[in-house]
Image (cartoon, rainbow over all chains, first blue to last red; front, side):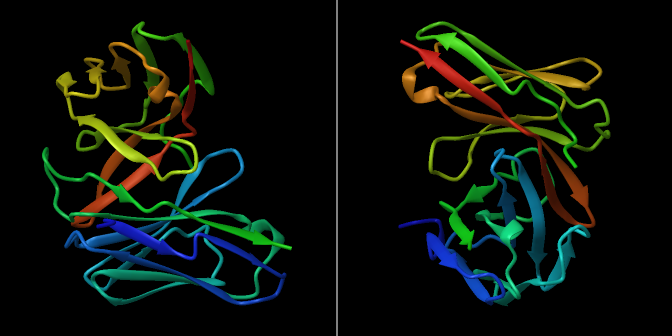
Length: 116
Length: 112
C-alpha cells in the first residue's frame, strides 16, 4: 500500500487555467504538507495543515489554496496558472507530535506540473 | 528561505566513506536536525535525525557539532544506490506542530 499518494503524476496545461492536485495518506498522520520543488531542486514549504489549522507560507500567492476534506486528504488547487508555477509539487505527512522519536516526513512521489 | 547551507555537489568512490557537511548557524535550541535523500524521480526519504548527540542507524551516522551550528552525515560505505540529492533540514516547533525547513541539498555522485 502506498503511504502517501498523489494524483496526477504529470499535468500539462495552459496559462490561465485552474487545476487541482490530490493527495491522500493512509498512515493516520495528523499533519499534511505541500512542498514545491523548482528546477534547481530547492524544496520550499508551501502549506502545512493540522487539525483544521492551516499554516501558510506567506510567500505563496493566494492563487494557491489547500483544501482538506478530512485528515487523510490535502488537495492543492491552483487558479490562473502562470508559467512560473511549473515545478514538481510534493505532498507529505507527519505525525504531529514534538519529541525525539517523532517528526519523520513521508513524501509522495510528486506531481510534475508544466504550464505552457 | 533555507536555514541550512550545503555544498552543491560531492563525489565519492564506491565503497569509501562519505562525509556530507551542513551548516545551520541560526539553529534554535529546540530545532532537530534531519537528513533526507531524494533519488531520481522520487520523493525525498528519511535518513536520520538528531538533536544534540551523535546518532547511528542502519543507513548512516549523524555527527552534530558541540555548538549545534553544523552537522555531518556519514555514509560508511558508499554504494551506487546512494547516488542522490541529500538534504539537511531543521525541524522546528511551530505552535504545537512540526515545520520542516529544507536546504538546497548536496548532489552526491558515486563513482564505480
